[in-house]
Length: 239
Image (cartoon, rainbow, N blue to C red; front, side):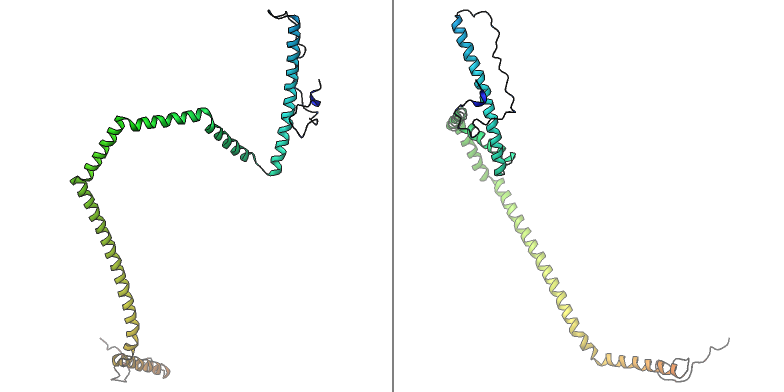
C-alpha cells in the first residue's frame, strides 16, 4: 500500500500532495515469525499480523497528513498576522473553558456549594455569627467607644479650625502687604511736593552750584555750606 496516495477522507486541501521529503516512520512489516501463541491457529495468527501491518501503515499516513495540516495552519496564521502569543492566549482560554465545563470542575463546584451551605446553616456557624453581632453591638454602645468617637470628632474639628485660622492669617498678611505697597506708592509724590522736601532740595542745589562755580574760577577752596563767609579757608596755624 502506498501511504502518500491513500485517501483517508479528512477533507484535506493537501490530499494527494503530501511532501516527498517527509521521512516515513519506519514500520516493521517483517516481524519475525515465532511460535504460534497458545490458543491461536495459524490462520488467526496470519490475520492478526495482516491487521497489525495495516494499522501501522495507517499511522504513518495519519502522521504525514497531520504534518501537512500543521504547515497549512502555520501559513494561514502568518497571512492573518497572528503571532505565537495570540495562539498561546487562545489555547489558554480554550483550556480554561474546557476545565470549567469538565465533569470534575462541575462536581467540585457543586461540592463546594454544598459545603458552604452546610457550614452557613450549621449551629456552630450561627452561634459564632450571633456572638460576633452581640460583641459588635456592645462595643458600639460602650463608654470607651463613645469617648473615642467624641475625641476623634473634637480633634477633627480643632484641626479644621486651626487650618482655617492659618488661612485667615495668611490672607490678612497678604492684604496688609498690599495696602502698605499702595500707601507707599501714594505717599512718595506727596512727600516730594512738601515744603520741607523742596527746602532741602534747594539747599542741595545751592551747594552744588557753588562747588561747580568755584572749580570753574580756579579756586581749590570749597565754600562754606552755610554760605556765611566767602573767604578762603585759612591754613592751619603753626604750633
